[in-house]
Length: 397
Image (cartoon, rainbow, N blue to C red):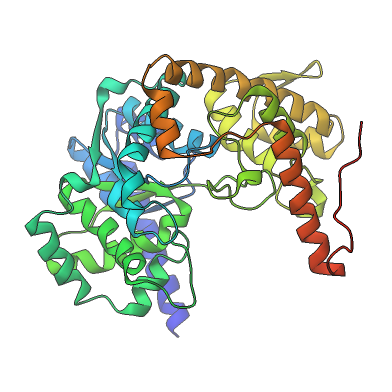
């Protein structure tokens, strides 16, 4: 009976959204399309549609905790932010430095300042490389308001309503999980919910991994009379190994400052299984979520023209396009954009010093990465057959 009631409720919401969609004029429909295209999920779509109809000056925010170094997975939210700006939405980018200090085993207070500066440099450089107009964006540092008395009082009010179980569950996808979790990590979802109120936004944008935090915000903020916002979620791009792309997993992602040889090595070693295998294909996923949205048109590969991702996916399935052709095009595409990002960064004299202080011993060359790949392979094999008697070494040239 409960499942039936939920189904009826969802159908009613869907019908309500369809009715509101019919109220939109052509210009409003185009605006809604720009706001919602390429998203994985929307919570509170009726609120968004209502604000489009009334002509409200819509304000959303996207937050990023200043922890590990930004990677090419950031192309997805940055490109979506460009869509928001085209739709005449006001966008605030939150550099969540306090969140970073609360996330277990990530940034400590000594690194926060330089990591904040690093994030600001590389994200602005990436936006410039992708032709996102910086003058329309507002950048905010979390500690500029999160340590204020009103914020602290609201945090305490919220903590008196949210159970330990709900807080842990809300942060399960984004917080380092432990058998005995620290209180700091449990506060993380509550802070992210409160940010909506203190940034004075109508909605929050983030990855699908933020969904449980968004639901917590929708359920709990109204209980302390701080309102309910809509939430927009982009899909999560699989890493090169097929799992979630993560700053903390070096072998799964491409750093924005990786040199061309390292980029090529990582792409060459990336998982690119057949579609029939049912295994996540990080290479194809990057075409779907990054290459085609950025190019905004067709691509030519092996003397064939592909107007959209499904046509490329089908060609790979039918073996009209080979794995090495997919990877070679991707190398050229990524290295072209990353060259612009790196030029924008290193043209600033103080950037190298900020980098060295924010991420000591950050460099990784081709030999380092090859050893890393070998070590990961050893770990995988050892988990099945037990440890090697002798250390496995790569073949010598």
